[in-house]
Amino acid sequence: MTGIHGRRGPFTDGDTVQLTDPKGRMHTITLREGSTFHSHKGKVEHDELIGQPDGSVVRSNTGTAYVALRPLLIDYTLSMKRGATIVYPKDAAQVLVEADIFPGARVVEAGAGSGAMSNWLLRAVGENGMVHSYERRADFAEIARKNVERFYGGPHPVWKLTVGDLVEELDETDVDRVFLDMLAPWECLDAVAGALIPGGLLCCYVATTTQLSRVVEGLREDDRFYEPRSWETMLRTWHVEGLAVRPDHRMIGHTGFLVVARRLADGAEAPERRRRPAKGAYGKDFTAAREQDGRGPAQTAPGTAPAVGGDAPAEAGVPQAPETPDAGPQAPETPDAGPEEPGTAGE
Image (cartoon, rainbow, N blue to C red; front, side, top):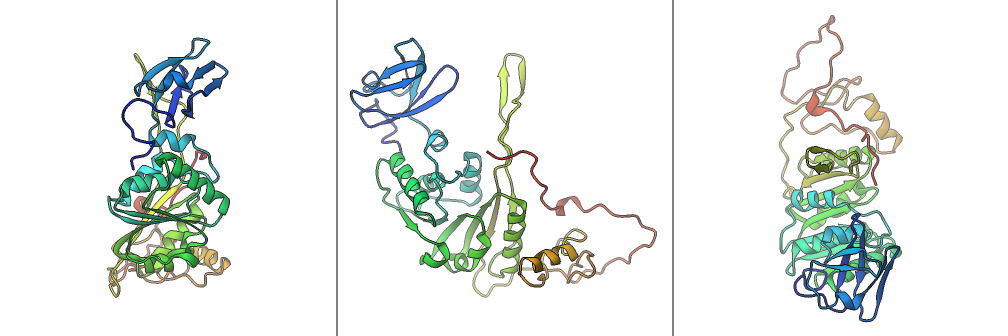
């Protein structure tokens, strides 16, 4: 099932078609015999499109030209009905690559939201894979179901949608990948670790730096996961008109952070981290924040000694140079700097 009912050949009754006007405005319609598309630029009869090849140009009764194309999945996800905010295509692409979603993979997703990421995952795993999506809210789950079924022309044979909490409902084992798009993914780590195969991968999508910090530290404290990686992706388009070649003034800036971590084999012990955290990373402020959240005393970062008085923990087995009384304040090492607050608001 490739989506949007076939992908090849002339338009037929029931096909989803995207009409784009001269200003780049896109309208997604479902072709029905005898129906009419209306806009402020006039009307287009569906019968004029049925039987025409993909990529045709039709005109409204007022003369406005529209390019008619079967929508790409990126177009579909941006135009479909939403309940929860979608995972934007720039982040969905990173998930598919960085989480290595392969044909035949068994994937668990929570939460399903509006179904955008479900569509991308289903396309990636193919007809021999499995995607089981969990969504706490029944209204969001219904929107996700309709969006997936509209794109694929009916129920997808390898997709299962469950309304409920992942921790309470998850019963899969031997899962290759888990994707978490929720407010508190750190609450699901125990359930996820029990479902993933050794070497399996967890990918988390979070919106804020506080969520990012908490899920990364939660993964580090769980000895079943190997050292997590985190990043964000920003997309900037360019204006190209003759000699006027410059970045566009608007861009899709911060939408979310991604975190990935691999599942270790049962009984395996991760090697010590070879890089010291930045000065003060696990000091008094970090400890106070944990205690305020009710998480108890700070755990020692893997491969480091406990923090004392707000100073940087010493790397295990590495002698530390004595402090120099005359030395001025040192800037934190660039590679270990924590994530900064994004300067561009998300969509």
